[in-house]
Image (cartoon, rainbow, N blue to C red; front, top):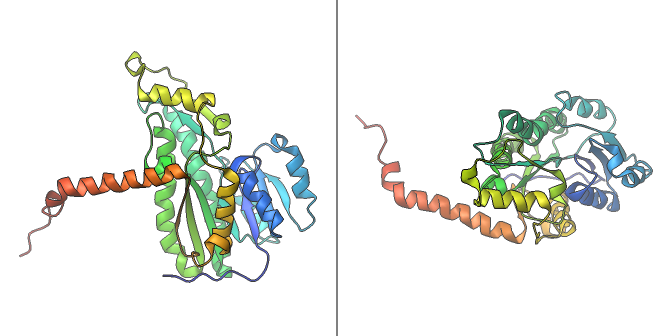
Length: 294
């Protein structure tokens, strides 16, 4: 297993979507523990008091406007690296669109992929050369249980998160020899007001979906009726400690997947059962489609 060595100095964190939810919670921990914060968001007026607090912190921390959908977003990393060496990149910004796969438009799915997959990818590609040169860095991709085991109506969101997860698995292998860690965080349901960034697909559902699980899920997720069982601040404290290798993260610096939330235990086991069942049913077939040896 690769050994990662953290520099003995305050770190510089770059966090997207820092104005609320997980991003704000983690950003506050970063400041409270003496690290430098580069907080970003698309709309600086969403949390003006926190923007002011960050900019006035006095250790070089700052708040910058960033739209992760912008194809030139990686240039912000390039401009910062001249003076602000980014140690930890946290890809957190996002939203979700809900609707049956049948009814989601290509425009809606592409927009979801742009924010949840291509947005993080642009920033990752921009920061890796600098981390590689310094032989240290941590890339954190905030994902979801939906990427492991998506629910009805979550095809667009689950597909984008699964793409991010798949890329992260490969990235972790590629950059570990350079001292760069990649951590995927799969989150369950938390008190983040996620419904505020939830969009229902514009196309109406066919009558055949009336009363379906998909319709029920859309109603729950888009109306704020979802009852979360996770505390975002506790989750981000755990994530912070895993990033810096302290507390619950001590000795676990090489881990690549961090599930958080009681509902994630059930969802991870569901995926295990799903894969195990496939091998149980088709294992003999799986192992008997090989080329005949001459």
